[in-house]
Structures are given as C-alpha cells and as structure tokens.
View 1 (cartoon, rainbow, N blue to C red):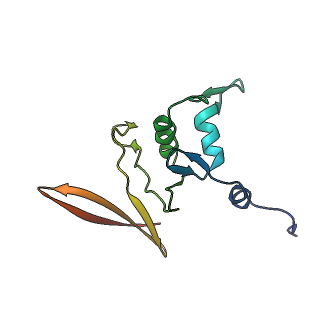
View 2: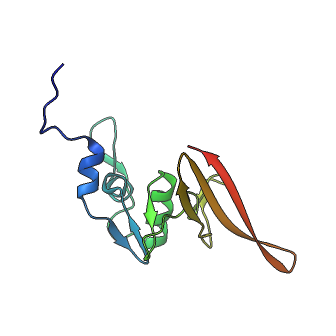
Length: 129
C-alpha cells in the first residue's frame, strides 16, 4: 500500500490548533472542548448534553477533565487528570485539587500534595503508560 505524503493524522491536525484559554488554564483538545460546550450528536443527529457558551468556567473545566482532555497552566505545565472532576463521586470537585503531571520516558509521575497531620507531605505515584 502506498501512503500519500500529504495525508496527515488526527494528532497532527490537533497540534496545529492553538489551545483554548479558560481562566488560568489552557485546554489543548479542541474537539473535546466542542463536545463539552456544544454537546454530542444524539440518535437523531442533534447535539445534546452541551453546557452552552455561557457556562461557568468551573463546569467547563470539570467536564473537560472528565473526558480526559489535556489541561495546561500558565507556565505550560501539564495538570494531572482528575484535578477538576472527582471520578469516584462522579461530580465536579469543589474546590479543585491542582496536581501536576511530569512525563519521564514510558512512566508518568503524578505529584500530589496532601496534608497529613500538621505537615504537608508530597506523594509521588508512578503509573505505567
């Protein structure tokens, strides 16, 4: 099979679009932002379930986080999934718990600060990707 030199993958197309700013954060995946705001196509082809253009930033960030979209802060650092959405309780976190994600080779280290007793404690969780 001969591959066309002009054909581009979806990931290459997504990288061409700039991240969308919401408050102090940038949402990288424009398709997921559209699904959160406008909704997803239903059985009849109409869009259902979108929050709308005037939705609060906190709700948009929470549902975008639920879809697994990449969120960056002002310093271009990646936020860990689950900062805005509580996957166990299946609802937005109030207040959000900001944690950063550092990619090191095939493993990901999520660094989360937790308060244990009187002193804050940093806890690293290593996950295989």
